[in-house]
Length: 186
Image (cartoon, rainbow, N blue to C red; front, top):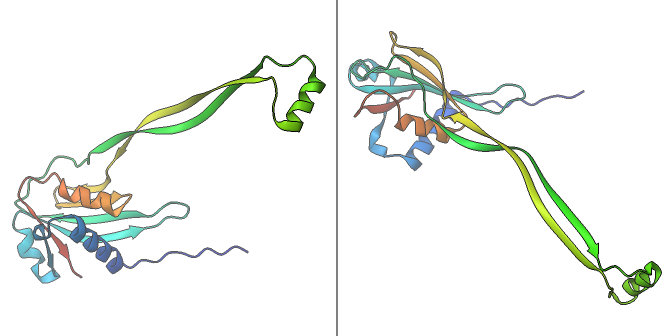
């Protein structure tokens, strides 16, 4: 019988991973840490609060990272949230075709075999060419997916493939200019 071990990450572990990566790659003054008692005064201004950051796992799939955001009352809200993406070529099929031909072969095959086996010499000239044959398609991959956007409730749930994608998305959130981001310490 096969038994599968499930990876278990607590919410604290995921938020800690996000915080460590943020401090490595971002401006430390842009991020603050608050507790639940400071949440309401912070949300009255032009701020965004990361309420939770969790690692979601599904059987047979790679880990995904979800970020739960609350948007302050003075931050600008778009009608819908869509993160930018990038386009790259995905290789579907790749083959190298090698063509070759022997020229100027000796008419006496037995004599030729003896020469090759004895001292490595011979009267043959080999010509070969290699041709790569690749099939690629352009793929557009979004930075992250907006799973839930509640404009009235001023909340947003985003999902990413990597923590680095989440950090990049934090820097380009569509909530106006000059807002501060806080991490909620539960």
